[in-house]
Amino acid sequence: MATPTTLTHRSRSMALFADALLLTVAVFWGSSFVIVKKVVEQTSAAVSDVAPSVLAGTFLYLLLRYVVAAGIFAAVRPRSWLRARGQDWARGSFLGAVYLTALIMQTIGLQWTTPGISGFITGMNIAIVPFLYWAVAKRSPGKFQILGALIATAGLAALSLRGDLTMSWGDVLTLLGAFLYAVHIMTTGFFAPKVEASTLAFTQIAFSAAALLLITPFITPIRLDLGWGFWVMTIWTALSGTIYAFFIQSWAQRYTTSTHAAILMGFESVFAAVTGVIVGMDALTWRLMLGGSLMLTGVLVVELLPSSKAIEREIDAERGLE
Image (tube, rainbow, N blue to C red):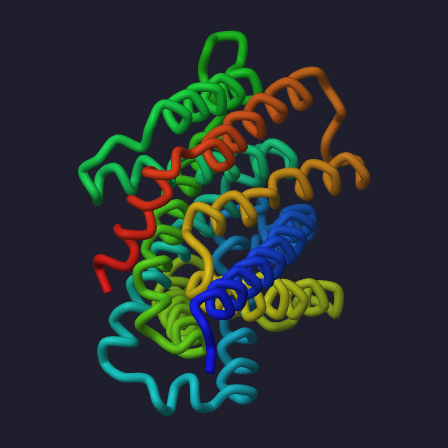
């Protein structure tokens, strides 16, 4: 018979395992910034007869990526859609719409900034999540969360503001995407305990693929003759950044809080910057180091120094909406 101590040990072990898997998602997402930037550049040039069209390249790449992901997932896990209920589709469609909008903003913005900067700005979603809980629970996130958000915002300014105190369109779009990623993480924390993990993952992917199938033809003709290099990168990002990431997040947030999920997946910013510097898309400048360090410090303050009451409020908020 399981004792309370045994159950606690098991829950802690599952939480640690879930956190470890979420960190692997950050590795895949962070390293994919370079790949996505390159594949969208190539696709944009391929679909335009005059000048590269970032919008056309973005939508065609994302369409084919999500169609590939949906097809593979449906074949490998047929129960994920055969047993899906109406409520499951409603929740998955909402999450899919939020995530797809964020991904489109991030992917387009990436063409006007570097992988490292895009990764760090995307990491701002970690500092945003506690404040979204504030809006939901109507309670202050606490002094450490406010302090961390201010530090992260200072880092964003150092990283992104130009001499005239403006941000590039790429950085602005990425920041808007970061806010939507925070909404996605928070809402997944509410939905994950209610829906089987593979079903929650597949319904998001399927909705996104369907939405892109409807929208993309109005932006660019759908083409498949894009070369083997495009298909290698597209299949890889479909497997790692879509199928694997959605399934792991849907499963892991049953056993850990959205705060933990946010900080662990937020480490994609570090992997994005490292990968960008290695391949030469990012220069190791003082702005990248200072801004990135401040943003990382801010999100660590937000996530690693919450009060026990703040943690309890977060758990209550997630479980209270079940």
